[in-house]
Every structure is written in structure tokens, then in C-alpha cells.
Length: 285
Image (cartoon, rainbow, N blue to C red):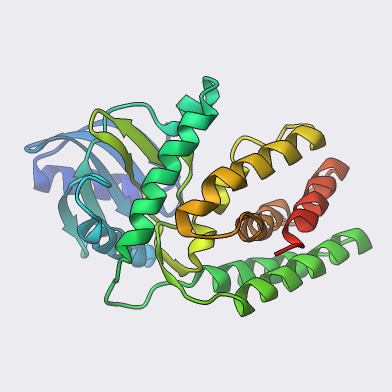
């Protein structure tokens, strides 16, 4: 896997040398971050280095890991704000995405709800300002609306913007959420399920599982898409004391931002049908 940012690759090598690590396997190579599986003085670990301008990534993740209830995530070994680097325990075991793909969706939902519930009850506080998820979503919708679009495109965006406004107006409380909590970011270890790789936002707790709700549905026929969404929402929403319709609402906004994020992207009719379905399912909120 080649690096999308050679500077980050060099920085990771420098951090590894300074901390006595051996880089074993590159896991992520993106513009804003790079991650490796490494051997360390503490045992197998994961090293992540963020781009200089993305300092909030390391800062938020380190604070989040420090405040997690014991056993809910990996141990934080080292962090370097100067190098935007973080080193955490390597979690052995399958992720819940693998469990779901093997036909064990119900079991995967139980584990995903379990870690979400524990995180929700922890009411984590982080002593500095961090991004509001709703504001981030609003900015993404504005970017989408700036693209030359069809009338159908514009109408759909208006509906999603109205939904986001309604979600904002009816949010009673916000708290720190993982921000990227889906099946692939929960590992089923010998000690139980553990989450990792947080993005960290301040948000309505119902938004925590918006990515998990949509996972694995992209190529499903509309009827199967509908059944899976409603069944999964019923299983996951109680983890944050939320109504299924509210979880679907946040997932609808997320789906729209993904659908329209690429300028001049061709959006297929089936995509609009799924968005329309999500809007209808969240309308009873």
C-alpha cells in the first residue's frame, strides 16, 4: 500500500525510531493520516500519525481513550502532540463486520449495542472544544448544494436540510460520541467487544450509530434495504435511549452527504429511491 502523503510516512518512521517500534504492516494511507501495526516494548500495537493541520485528530483521540471506561477500548501507550502521533494496544480478534458478513448479524448487533450503551452511560467529558457533528453535516450539505444540480437533486437536498434542522431543534442534550462507530470499528476480543479509531464529536447521542445503520446496504434492492434498516434501527436505537426513527433520521442526513459529496457525481435512480425511503421512515420522528 503506497502512502497518499510521503511526509506522513517519513514522520511515522521517525516516531517509530524514537519510541522503539518496528513498523510491520501499513493499515491506512490517506491524505490526513497514516496507520501501522507495529511491535512495541508493550507488545503488538497500532501507530497512527496525523497530518500537521489535522492536530485535533490526535488530541481528541488521546483524550477519548484516556476517559473510556476500563475494557471498552485499547490501552493508550503513548501520544505526541508535537508529532500528531498516537500509539495504542493492538486488539486481536475479528471485527463485527466480519461477524455480520458471516451471517451473524443479530450477534453483531448485540455487541455493537453493548459497546454503544457502555459509552453512552459513561457520559465522557473532554476539556476542550471539539467539532459538533450537526455543524459538520450542515457544511457538507452546503457544499453539495453548491454543485450544478437537477431539480430532483435540489428537492432531495431541501428535504434533507429540513430534516437536519428538525433534528437540531429537537435535540435535548449533546454529549461526546465516538463519531465513527460502526461494525468494522469494534473488535471482538477474548475479553469482549472493544471499540477503536474514534473521530470524536459532540452530538445528539442518537447520531452515534448512524454509520452502523447504513453499513452493508449499498447494493441491496429497495425492499431488502427497507427491511434491514428498520430491523437494525429497532435493535440499535435503545442503546442510546433513542427512538428508531431518530436514528434513521441521522442516518438519512449521513446518506445524503455521502450521495452528493462528489462534484458532478452521477446519482442513480436507485440512490434517490433509497434516500426517499429513508426520509419517509424518519418522517414519523
